[in-house]
Length: 298
Image (cartoon, rainbow, N blue to C red):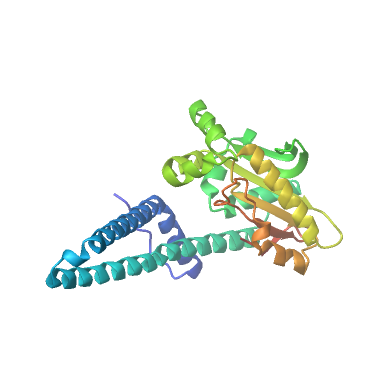
């Protein structure tokens, strides 16, 4: 029997509780969305077939049947249009969940005092508290978390990352399926559209985080981010995974064109050919006292 949390007047706690509630029912919401969408298209397809049938025999029908069918047809078309419009309600749920994740990430990262012996450890300790998958990150084995390591991309080029987190499924079968179904080919579309739950399970079995820290005297520019975006995408293609976080940390801030760049779709990391799934760059400023300020969270 679940115990209700005590009431609180703290606005931040209430916001986070909303996010936790939505997160705990994510699977039910996703299943409801897919069932709702499928029902709409089934009804729409039947309506289309019946319309063609009735048009073919329209002249042979009595006037009363024509009137009745005409009214029913208008009602069904109106219902289908209304149902498609109502799908925006599911998008609203996603928007609320994203806003809560954004609030959690920014407030936690900026308010919690960093802990660690070096910049990489301090950032990691803060990130695993601020992330929307904080519970998973805190339970990762230590050998899945690497600092100052070179990582290979699909192009075989080596990239030096400050933090590289990589966790794969323990099951050999899941690792095999992930290798052959989450690759960059046209087959990815089949798994994404026809077997969404299977596709999602394979993604959930993997955890990837890519972080690059730039210690420059001048702010990070758009060209710097373009280079890092290509590096992160190359690594993601090699791993056949969508990273949970791709983060750029700057000790001197970001230029205005760099902020504008991450807001554009061109900055999205899309390792799969179908472009349906992507991740974005998060920008963090490391202050002189070791604390953090989130310049952009996507």
